Length: 446
Image (cartoon, rainbow, N blue to C red):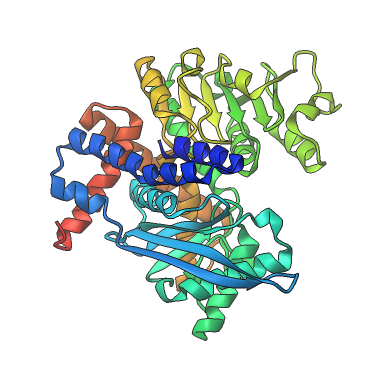
């Protein structure tokens, strides 16, 4: 899977073996082709249909200058791939990372098209990035970099063309700088050209909680389908990754009555079979502590709570496992030890293909990332709609609309799974590809 290759690329980059890295880079999109080959066989697609799916509409590569605080000028490589726009303007994040390259951006643009189609929002897929280590830049340099990227790409961006959003090492402040630069160039206000902005610049309420909350909505339907013999309070959940997504997922799952028994961050985690209060862990994290340190917090401590590692958390005997941290957490090495009945993928690519096959044989239901964590892009769509209308919704309305999308998408994926007699992941992929190809055929492109 793409995430495995990207992780390997990172290790090579750090080792300094760049010649080897170039060879690996060439293979990233090849992995996407293999996955499309599998779906092509499952769906009985023609070669022409497969070729349309794998052909990016537009690839832009640029080099732009940034004057650093030292007074020196450094050039940065920037990329934007608008992979498929058959269903609407393209949508996808912009990442700032030292390992950004064209093959990676192409692959991620393809998967954004798939994700948008899964949750039936009228977007195609895109992705962008800058080859940079943002940790090496000052705030002033980071702003110049953000504005420089937009100056080099503004002709192919816009509310009806391609709408960026945050991704790895970018955030709402960076989106605000990019919006401002775009509007200066165009001489108009155009808040709909970018999403996940600060609310004061046209961002949507509930955008910060949307990915985690969307995961709860999907989980609720999965529980009704696959774990119908238990009440919510009896259903145990372990969450790996207590960042923005994992913490909001835990908070709202707890509010819905589910029993969160384990949580973790990069340093380690806690296990409490009687249940953990996410609000207390969030407060502990906001005080600057890691999750493991919350073990000694007087508000969290109990006789049965204990520290566990991330590896141990994955293998707990729980009903639902939620990997919400990094890719490749469940592999061929530990997949046989997974005891959960359902896995909700809130992280991107937390399960390797080899592990996926093993979990499927074990009868574990995996709700794939392209469905489970799509609450973020769905709410970005809501933000775009509000920007275009100039009319903004209260949080309750955003959440209501998000639930409707996530619920209906779950049932569409389930129907596709049953139609093709496969798992939820391939069911989701087949559903998305069917929608994309339908749009392409109506346009006369197939």
